[in-house]
Image (cartoon, rainbow, N blue to C red):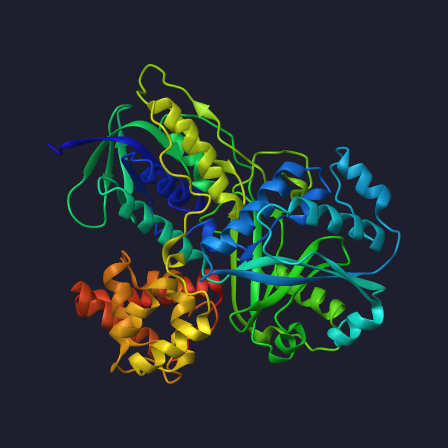
Length: 549
């Protein structure tokens, strides 16, 4: 008989909301178990637009509290995770001076149809409000306006149909999946009694004890005081496993493509273009690790297991780019990868998908006969606000456990954000003399591991690269395989690194990584072959990546 372990809180789902709550509660001395049926950050949290933003478009729907929280959380992340989150100058092309005001007023007062043709006056007002709400913990400049001549000089391929352009700062996140992992690691470091398990299935519950099967070893049995359902678009399915019938989620699908397009990257020059497509939908394009990331769609979808970017979405993205940037050529041969996810938005029948609130809530199913613990479901939210959402839920959990808050996460660095150098170039030059690695390589490691980069660099001295470009070393992959709860080959190439998404992964490199990971994990030759095939299948099916070799 499996021994039953008593814990304070069980969190089901290790995406950004679950991981953020896990870290917060562990910092308060609460004993937690964080469990996911897949890898950490492998669901919706792995498919964002890779932005940390205040949500300027939410001003249209009157969600001023959400904008205020989002801009604050953006500013905090720029400080707490400087290795992953960095400022992003954003340009809004404007196609008229006065259009859109009546439609915007209708939307503000509850219209369920999307506004179109946002003119300069409306955008100027929005940017003024955005600066106002972003004043707390401000770390970036206020907005500016470009006249048509300046906009076309700054971005020559831009359509001459514009009349002006607005500019403002938001932020991007380079490695969202790693940020999720670092939250998990921070939680375990803060509370030795807590556990975090990936690839672990919920097999049974009697309303008192929950039983799980981890990837290796015997089943584990947990008896929590509180259960938190942080399963994102799977929330209603997980609640069903817990004996609850809910209809909390009405998700929408968001797809993105990444292009190998040096001309577009040069034109962007480190900026994002945030633009209105001809049908009124909002799209974006920016330089993500040397590729042009284009997104995103917003259509209703229900099955997170089968979600993928389809042909119609790709055609739509390319058409939008051609209309926006007629000075450049776009075609499908430039695509290096595609990805898609289901946003776990609140159920909202009859509303245009783009107008469904991105705010969050945490409804509670109280204890009933046959279920000894309340279930808190984390509904909605956006990537940027995960810390604030976690803080709200953690405070509610602490109140139920009659425990005080010990630590605020507001100014708490995340993972490699600790000991991040004030001047990265000075740090790189100093480490270059000590390690013998180039300053460029050291800055690459700093962008992947933050304050831990020096330790990774020490391991790398004298080791050979795994790829011809020297982007990945055997020692770096070995560290990932042994220290970051890797269970499968896909974990390394899709979530612990960005190599697959950015088109840097080849068949030969995948094989070398499989051999390194296999040696460290004791995989048989058959297991290595199985991992290779499973990874190739996932890359092709979910990301439209077909490896050479």
